[in-house]
Image 1 (cartoon, rainbow, N blue to C red):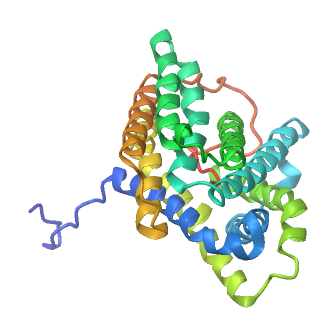
Image 2 (image 1 turned 180 degrees about the vertical axis):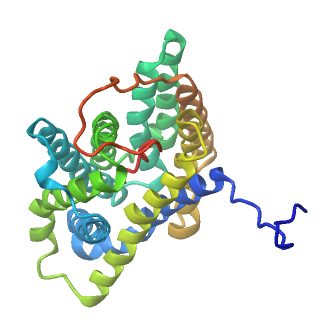
Image 3 (image 1 turned 180 degrees about the horizontal axis):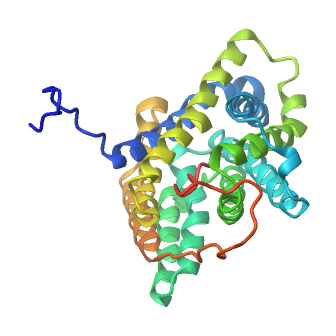
Length: 310
């Protein structure tokens, strides 16, 4: 054991991949535990409460420098906030109707397609098709009991996640992570409130509020901190490849928390989605920010954590 100058053994550093994995587990655990709250206040009500508590935390951590924000950045910040609110609401509406693992796999088509399109290899464009085959196996349309509304909400969440990635990369080049979240999460909460307040009205209780506060810590507060720490020691490509495990974690927590038993065909489907996601992320590229571009609150050297509401 390597000792410190004082003679004490130095504790081994936590591997960054474990923090990334813990962040994904936190995201999916929040989704699994949200099912009971959804039954009480509805998916939009759950999204509104969770985002509102998350907004309070980020506002307490970092006061948004609203006066320092150039007008040219306002549309991007508002767009990211609105996208986050809509994505959260549609995803929760999806898991109200279809299994968690299936919803996560469908939603994952959004970032997977973004990564494939950005690839310099035309071969990478086959990965979304492979993942789509996996999604078909997950939904098992031949059984005749597909919940089209649930699938539709998951597809909307996938479109939202793809848009979220593009906007996050733009905002992340201009603002530090916590600064951006302190401005976008309140906008997301206000967006979800449009449907969430009427849906939750008359069903709020101390238990529901306490549950929502706990879910907000699981997503987005804890994942943001863990992902930010992980990205200090991981390349974005390695991090993105690891995140391809998220649909599998959705299936695992759906099984252990919600007793959603996947069929053999669905297990094959999730393997296809994870494999396609890992391959597309490794080939995906993004253009670096323009050197010398003006910024309101410049991001630190650490890449912005790709926290999303799911």
